[in-house]
Length: 110
Image (cartoon, rainbow, N blue to C red; front, side):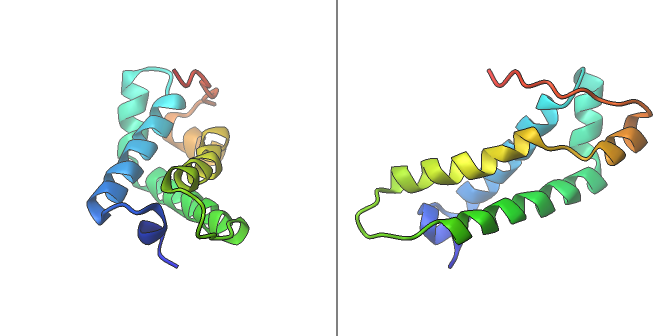
């Protein structure tokens, strides 16, 4: 099953959603603007993020039973609930290599 069809979004909307998610995640784990820019532009961290996000999308499909009576809004909320777990994981080894210091997660999601 295709995530774009399930969420009923266009490919462009899905791409924008993914980019926004990644940038929000990078901001969440950044201590300042310089760190944010460095994390957001790091290809190894981006690859790691995409790999972990794909695992969460698989979990979404593995735990989601498509019923005809579910609204698109309910489906999207469940998808967000699953994929927002990204905000609780980070690649400590990649962060340490990137900044030569341990970055403490900033869980201020406002």
